[in-house]
Length: 524
Image (tube, rainbow, N blue to C red; front, side):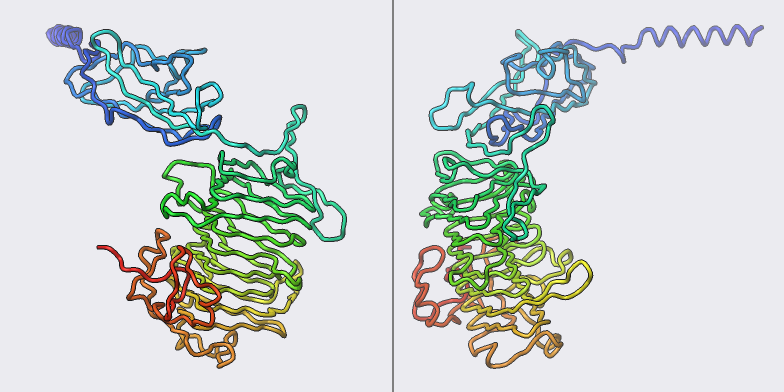
């Protein structure tokens, strides 16, 4: 009996103590919230394209459990922002993502607010094709109200995308002569051919391309100085049989802004995506395209920066690329297949495979170019420069094609692996020459391995091996060389006289440097 009485007495004490606890009682917020920042800057977005997700951390530094009566966007249901508070989307209907009630926050705890936006610039007032859109997150109201600002720069753009059949949901695909038999072939590449009115890209607005923009036979796509082109995932440009691409950039006075250069990159404008490889497809110069030229262009973050195929026997080169830069390609920076390319004052760096690959033979002439690769050497199997004269078909048979010529004059071919060029000869004609170049190649390990033929014919005097080019920061694509560079003064005036200025417009002297940029004095 005593044990039973003791049990009930203990139970009563526990129940009484529990009823007096305030652990699960929340007091209204009194305006003492703290925030990780007072303004959330959502990086630049294109009109009607959703942003990345940004976060704001909110702290309750007090020893009291509190409830925040309301968290809302100042612009209410008309706001272009949307929020998620600790995994919830708030009230239903038009107020979803805009308005939250009675948000609980434990003592000395925090919560996350996730913020996104999709903004229609046509509904705003803008005179220069961009608009600074703002709103505020309001916490509580009246005397206890606190706020955090939201800021986003919105850009207008010219959008090029394939048509969609609203009934079937099928997206338009490109049809062109793939196999060269004169008949149009249906492909699975989503995209469409550019209309006549779309064949000149200007610097008035950026261009955003979804899918592949095709240049049809007889058409020429021209990009004027200062043009900005942004590609969505799995997008690019295809220049078909009898068509041409002319990228006509110009030297810029500001090397950070590059106001006159044509820049081609992905459509994610946030700094986080500034150097992410593989964001889009390629510029594909299809077999049969003609008179393609690229001058003062920066091509970055593609899968293959430029893919040039076929036409190595034509009188005019398939592609002439000058004063241009190709960076952060997840596969190849510049890939040629049985084609003809002339490159001058061109820099290619940081590629998942090779920065330049001349495959299945062809005809290549590179002068005052920097072909480098500082991609993580543990994750790439190819050198900065690759030349071969064959492919293997689906049955494993080897098909060869002549490497008519591959001349590299006053060039830097270097990287963070060794060797940084590979010559794979399986045919009858395999002609190459390196003149006055800085090369990374370990002679002791690879001499006479079967794929390399060293002679005075292929390597004239003037080449320097395995001396650091002393790039400023090749991992960040800063390819300036110092006066201590192994490339300093090794160039031949025979070739520099053909290209008297470097990629920055600086005159080459009597003792020119190898590579696309003359040496400078680095500032501490």
